[in-house]
Image (cartoon, rainbow, N blue to C red; front, side):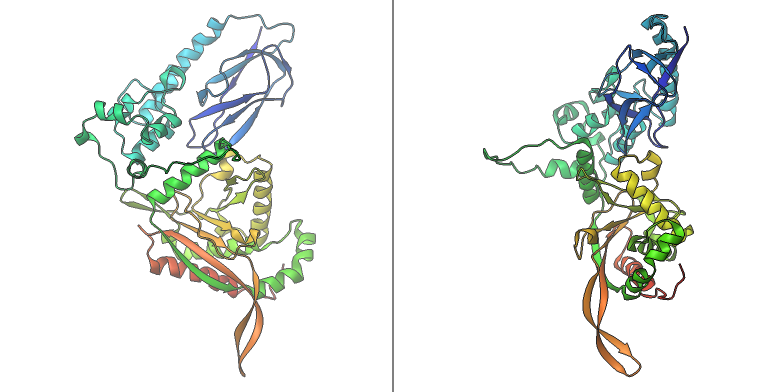
Length: 433
């Protein structure tokens, strides 16, 4: 009897493992091609995995909450519906075991660990950022399959749940923690106790909210945040859009909002000031060649995700409008792929969509800056004319830029922010659609 193995798919360039969060099938179920088999989650995105074949579920090799390496079988499908007999579990597991050892040895070489213990690239990356040595990693108790150290294990370790074990196993002189380490801040600042009354509701954070919380706290610990604010006159843009939005939709099949126009200005300014289109790695600054602008999207669940417009500087207004509409729609339907949210070099968050005029956003690591756009408000303003100054009604928006003061100083951050405003204010009201 022929069988087909369902393998844990590759969920992005830097993702080497995923957690099974839900099974939609059981052993013995008859399934059709494209039926959803399971849901998996990484630290970046959740995805549903469909079946590429028709058949009967013969074996499910992992349970919910198991962490599985990319490329390993998670289920076996019998391609003949007459039965599920045709091979014992041991016969299936033997080649898997061989493949697993080969795969883990290969991955171990790529992350340069002189140990028989497997560490995923995510765990290794966290260890590197936090200054955790190989000796310390060896001492961390793993709760994953076969004792593997998971992301939660190492984060719990950093939170101090394994402080006594760490102190006993590693001499203090061997522990070298960078000044930017979140472990320092975590150990020095214990959260205040919270009192609870009988009327209070207690709700556990969902997985995405926990990840957002961890990412935001890490960003504030890593980057000294500075925020600058300018007010831009968007009158020409507002009038142009009101005049052309129907014709734009009729011609291009996509609505024109303010965000594509703002994204175009951001992309131009990033080309002018490459020091803002950058990342920090220790004492090195990485200047990004691609301009990939992330857009923070609020989800119906109340959480947040940041899909990325790749090579935004090479797209016109139509292309940017199409990308923004598509990505925002996929985000709200929970259908983004890992590639849709990777590779961002700069982020913009639209506080104005909630009628907020100013925001001070937290930098989306490992980027060095993030822009917040406020609501567009009608305001009286002084207008210079050939015959003198007059008072007029103008459409104004506050733009606020939070930037990493390790590498972006006031002159660079302020000049970049002003350049965005200049591009917006120079909008040609007669521009063709």
